[in-house]
Amino acid sequence: MYTRVFLFAIAGTLGQLASAQTGVTVYGVVDAGIVRESGGPQGSVTSLQSGVQSASRLGFKGIEDLGSGLSANFKLETGINVDNGSSTQTGRLFGRHASIGLAGGFGSVDIGRFFNVVTNAMIADPFGAGHEGAYSNIINFALRTQNAVYYTSPTVGGFTGEASYGFGEVPGHSSANRDIGAAIGYAAGPLTVKIAREETENGTGKNKLRISNINTVYDFRFVRVGLAYNVNKDDLIVDSRDWLVGASVPWGLHTLIASYIRHKDRTSAAQHASQIAIGYTYTLSRRTSLYMSHAHIVNKNGALFTVGNMTEYGTGNKGTALGITHRF
Image 1 (cartoon, rainbow, N blue to C red):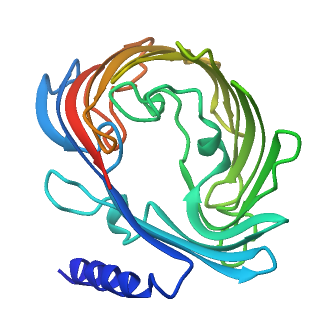
Image 2: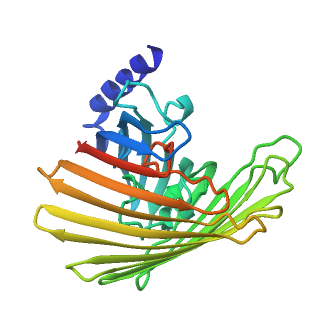
Image 3: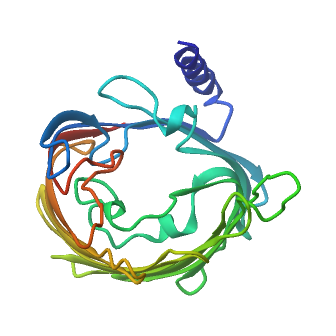
């Protein structure tokens, strides 16, 4: 109850401030679908889920012109489960995103909680990390960093750099829970390339997880093709490689999407997996679309990957969804 009252109070306050700021925007996504999952130990499950294609959310963002090319900005974004009205992100009020920053000729600097550099680099997935074919079903890493500073450089000759530093904030141990990321991107015409690396310490500062990925997207107009390669390795047992190839084919109000992901476990367990996914969206208007998707995972040697979507991990190795998304 208090959370809902607080959100309404913020919305009203920001609406009143809109005329005083250079720009304040209230925005969001409402997404829900019927999902059928099978192949898990519990058998087949049919459910109504929120955020299948795109995570349902309510957000507030604003910018103020400070003069001389300098501006201040903020962004607050909370996740919502449309199926039952609850909040996502383990109850965090603005768990999806919470930041404040400055931008100018030097680029931009933001502080708070937001997607990390490897998540921002995953542009090759035609499902956009959503649907039943989400890349996160196979390619696993933490999506966000918090207590962090994130720098984005100006674009020069098509190149853009990014760097982040997340404070671990563990008393007496400066490296525990700390994460450091860096990325470089290039965009020119139909080609976009991003390379990123994130290093995250565990809670004791004795096991560093290193994630590196490269994503390439080429837009042929009649088809948009994406390729990705991801490396996961820590100091103890994690050692794997992931490959993704995907494509989206737009024509008129319709879009067909498909992807294939291969996970290779380089440890002695050899728990490999592969996922194949197909999807379709139909645009009803500039803000509203219908969608359907299906994905199937083949696990090897006891691997336990499941077919989920943007906000749900899934219960089995097969999943089919039919839903609707509205953006405002």
